[in-house]
Image (cartoon, rainbow, N blue to C red; front, side, top):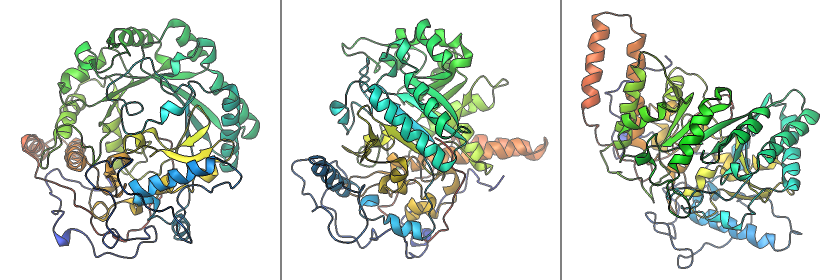
Length: 527
């Protein structure tokens, strides 16, 4: 194991001056959080768009905020400038404090995009009450065309092939997304994938193209599954558990439950294991973790993705209180059942990624570790955006101002929002850099670090949960690596006792000093 991380070793208190190193100059930060002028918005609330003061648009020399503006773009110039001002107002880090050119000069090289999320549909047949696309801060979906046009598909294929060829990518991963992508007719489902494969075969013949579709499962039919299987498109399904009681928030636009249709689709999918990618499930503290896990197993998923709810310091998750770790407790209940099961009935991505990181292995996620972000989203209108999860932070948080017609994916790599998510340690708060778990946690999922008026350079709002979860799994892995005997039995008994104890209070500091840390460049993989 690369590092021995014990379950019982507390981190230094965040308000202890010895808990963080002496601040050092940081080429990625043009204004220290400790010396920056007070923000114009309250940090604990999302400010009203109309009433809160706005900073003036950036002028003169300094870090570029957003993409270059085309002076001949007409009305689009105003929209891009307004977007830049919004980014600067809501998220000074990275939009006014990150100098991308200085970061490049300091040795931070861009990592190519490897995963492309195609928003083939911008509307959904369900109206889940917690959906980050429709029910959270960003309402940009209202301005999107309902479906991606053939011209946009062709342009997306051309740009993806161009990027694959420029970087000699061995593989490109496509994700058909929405909205609900299965609103398309069966004969149309594979059109975007076929277009990308054709373009890539011509421009970068050594690049392999994989494809999945992420769906709510309610529209899965034999015809759609046949069309997807024929095109080599695997299917992932989002569900809140395997029982109707787990899915009361997954309803259609008339308020009717969608679980019965989703369950029917999942049972059909389970009969086609070659097409089955797995199930995604958001942790719900109101549901019993073991019941949730066991009920999902009834659908024979090859993998289960357990996701923390999209939340941040301005909009904390349910049950969030200092000194408590309800999400770790929920997840560890599932981990213990999964870890000690005599037969591995499914893979749980979160647990496997933590184990891989503890062992010093590369991972395929942006939610943990220091792997550079490598995902781009293409909306139905051809605009290029960052990861959808950012939509939980503020209106326009995922926007870049770039389109397939005006920008390449190489230009996206220098956008401050994406560049910040490729900086590894240097994108993190000083307190995170000093943490012994940083190579595993990586500061947590980027959107979970957000605070209005400050941006994304804070510890995760789930910091205490992640500490407890990682330490517990580390102890389990260490115990499994020990030869049988009294020492192993004693370690197991100690861990069992510690697992029942309340975690020591851990709260994130307002902003720890930034520490100089060497840049890390783990293998770039798609998330």
